[in-house]
Amino acid sequence: MMIIGCDFHPSWQQVSWVDSETGDCGERKLVHVTGDAQQFYRQLVAPVLIGMEATGNSQWFIELVEDLGHAIWIGDAAQIRASYVRKQKTDKRDAAHILKLMMETGFHACGRRTGSSAICGSWCCIGTSW
Image (cartoon, rainbow, N blue to C red; front, side, top):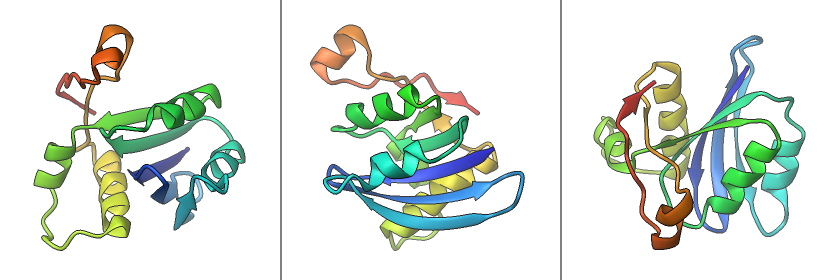
């Protein structure tokens, strides 16, 4: 199974991945306006596990990967940042750190915006540790 750590931004995302069966790994920047993200996730064989921080403007992305048959874990940004030992923050390091937390079961998932919470824009953290 492929596991992907995603540092999501409104116009692009930085991803780090590892294939747990082959050991293949890599990283890449995906620009949204050019269709890089859609193309990247469509070419992956489901199921893929994707982890990202809770952030706004990501509903289209969540729906895309779920429609493709992939699973997505949305993590509490404060808890992810608190578990980061290194103080200097970069997008490549953030994506790699999310991937590391997912592989080491230190990823704390939050609830996904649905129904009335999507209207008010709130995130409901459920504190589940995977």
